[in-house]
Length: 270
Ligand SMILES: [Zn+2]
Image (cartoon, rainbow, N blue to C red; front, side):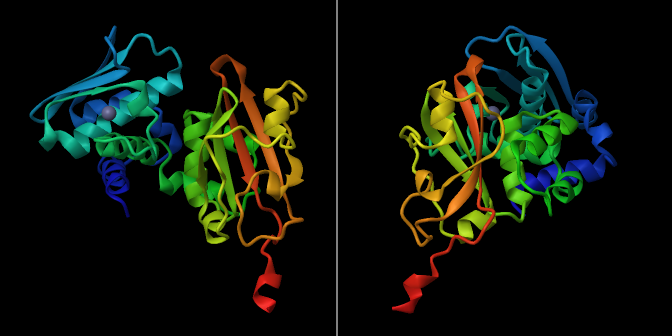
């Protein structure tokens, strides 16, 4: 178990959190741990924590109006308090820090740990994992989980990848460009890889949505070759793609699901 997971589980045990409903009382959870939450204008940051011994004040920027984002920010700061208090008594966290999951920015390790802690606290394995297993992946299903736990769709989709037993991945795009992908174990085991930092293939649903050729929110079957980098998979294989565009943020979330055998067994016959 990774360190952020360990700390989040430990906190849930200590406070005897028994249900998803208990998790909604996040400010009370923070207070029980010694951290008070307040909302104030902040310059150049989304959230901050000031620590004095076993007590702390978490400040969330008043510019954050989305309650799920505010919730994630509080959990992130609580992560700094639980894990990093020996490293200093002030953390000032920007939007980039709160969105940092895998980027290799210098000095970002603690920010990623705080995000992992927030995901493990708000989407705890004990309540969340069982809902992901033996479930056909879809953005609709993940959105239902996001609603149930009051967490953003992206954070919930990433956590879903951790517990699903299906080979699938989510791809995040911004302004028409593929930015990053995050895969399940089954997807990784197939050796599949999505090329990022480029535009999606014109034959994908993602491209059709960006170009306004489609408005569909439903899953569609596409050629695996439109998404995957070269690998040991059958070149005629198809996969399921579902893409949702969020025009107001200029972003898109795509779910790719390998719902059938796509390994190219011919390679081994030679
Ligand atoms: Zn931070």
